[in-house]
Amino acid sequence: MKKITLVCLIAAMILSGCSVTNSTSVDSNLQTTENTQQNTKNQYIMAGKIAANDEANIASKISARVSEVSVNIGSNVNKGDTIIKLDTQDLQAQVNQAQAAVNTAKASLVNATNGTRPEQIAQAQAALDNATESYEVTKKNYERTKTLVEAEANTQQQLESAEQQLVATEAQQKSAQEQLNMLKNGATETSIDVYKAQVEQAEAALKTAQTALSNGTITAPISGVVNAKNINIGEMASPSATLVSISNSSTLFVNAYAPSDIISELKEGQDVAVKVSEVPDTVFEGKIAVINSKLNSQSRNILVKVTLSDPNAQLKPGMFAEVGLKE
Image (cartoon, rainbow, N blue to C red; front, side):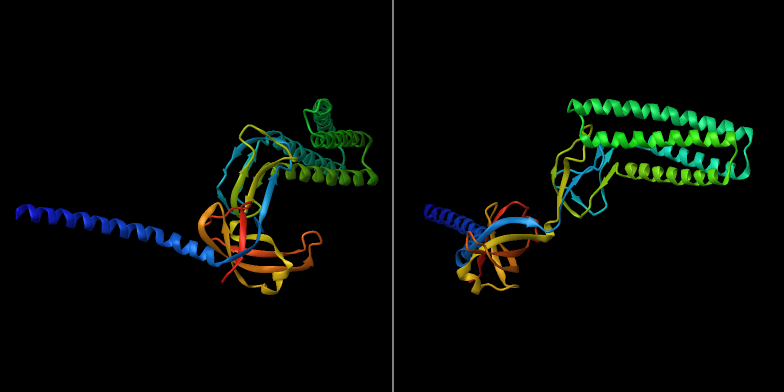
């Protein structure tokens, strides 16, 4: 009798365990089954690649070495966030030099207006010496850059930038020479006008230098997710290369082509189903935003733009999507 009772208890435990396992298995597969059934019911008639309305390929406006990278692939950024910093020591020196030129030009204008004194001539001579030294340094940099461009080690844009700097420093040198000459010869109404023009020229050069310096900090033009990073600390950034790509996944869409014979079944604002092979067993919600009235002359299909709903951020630009009509 005891043996019979023991056997019954073991059988009951085994059956109970099987029941729990089967129940868990059914629950875990319920969502997959529902999605599979929904996929089966939907009629998938269009396909295309996912893209984002807000995308940005970010490049540097200047050639400089990267000193800091604040993002990586997958990083979330907000518009205006700093993502890359460049080495701007040379640019800061140019700003300082341009600011000194402005100060000198303004002082020369004041001196010319108030009359010439010996110390003013000495100051103008010192300004000329500094301008000449800057010109010589810039000239050597231009010649070095030109040689590198001819050897295809630098870009044409770098040469143009060096040439602009050379022209600016040459103008500053000539301006300083003219100021010294005018002080020695005495200021006239005409020379005062020249001093005023030199102040304006120096201020314009300062503004240009300040703009170049500000380009050393690269910020995100849009909010979104970094989906590509092609630069690292210590590498050279150039205006011709994309450093970082950002896309806003909240504005995803698919440009799909629908056969002309089913266009009558479609309308703008219509809800559709979307499936993506990279995210299996999931059906995404979509909405027809635009139906192009122009027929493709080769495929005889019509372009349909479908906006996507992706609350869990599973979709990425470049994924292939199929669009179906809901049954």
